[in-house]
Length: 254
Image (cartoon, rainbow, N blue to C red; front, side):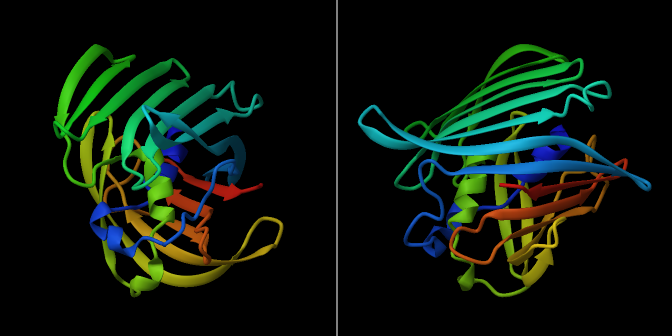
């Protein structure tokens, strides 16, 4: 399940392209997106779980902010393989979508992880608090590089990019904080494409490929593929990636 979440959150962005943002947000308060997760090994397909994303807004210290939330769970029929309960939340400034706070709470079988990041722009620092099954509670201070963003806010930032400003083959760099490190990745715009979902419903999409970090999840030199709706909402419709063992897919259901 964490592999699927990594796929979702490696959707792209970069604040250096802020001049290419849409004039109006591609999402709004109250939006809910739901996805089904499937895992493939050889000829076997498993309905592994579901993911949900929610947009809310509030006022913090006289500042209007978005509150993004996401939850992911394995289906009970799949819990015997690995019970997964994921929770993510982030707070971002409504004016520029710069992240202010990011929290992750995860249980994946016998593994657990708790992460907390505070973004301080006056000091150009990220204050982190990390704890998981392999590491005792650790407080750390990281450099806040320009354009750094958390995994959850990244989805909404990238949805707000005006892709009419780009050509097929253009590369967009990424700078995302994950596991207490800032990773520099790239995505490539592959142009428009029409796809069919599992119910044979047609979607007009924009297609991208994204580089990944080889290691415990992905193979070396592999890419994931992402299809988003070809309109101003840029809603993620379908995502597919090869991993060390098998393939994972996520498709929108509601």
